[in-house]
Length: 264
Image (cartoon, rainbow, N blue to C red; front, top):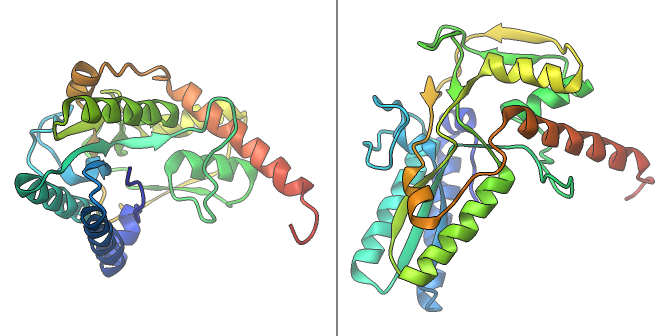
């Protein structure tokens, strides 16, 4: 299972070479090592960013791949490489196109711990903690009901289960496939902020600013294929629950850091 990648849309626009080196060149190195060692099955982490600005929503796997940022383009490149290898080698794979993975382990054992969080929910909660002075909203003039971007947020436990189901499918059928991972409906940036304020009870400061390069107005998954062919059934399709698990993790993380002795 190949999860490793550089994943920040905005950064990919500013530093495209970094994304092509890490997401493309380094994945080619991995695939070469797999071929050398006769590893013939792969679960690959792809992204909804491969679709760019799809005309139809929710977006299905059959939609044109038209990425609008280097991050999405790097993932399209590797999907093409995988297809080319599978066409001539004894090699099978499932590419899972993630939508917006969010939340933390529902038992609060693990969660996100980035040094400089960029994901909306994590950034909002860290702003509520006071780690950031304010939360920036990048663009309020998108063609959406409230003018902010809409995303399909999927809980990390559900996406972990999708990987288990995809692996079972791959090993049982030995068939290559591509599947979306999402819930099929989305929330705007403003809706996420409102829910984060509700969960935390903190009216943290927000500042609206210009659009960020590379962002699509709306990305919502059609995950019919994943559900039908693997039997995947999401358990945590609830934005408030997703944010609550992330908040519980942030509280635990802060307490852990507070309790550390110098030098740990």
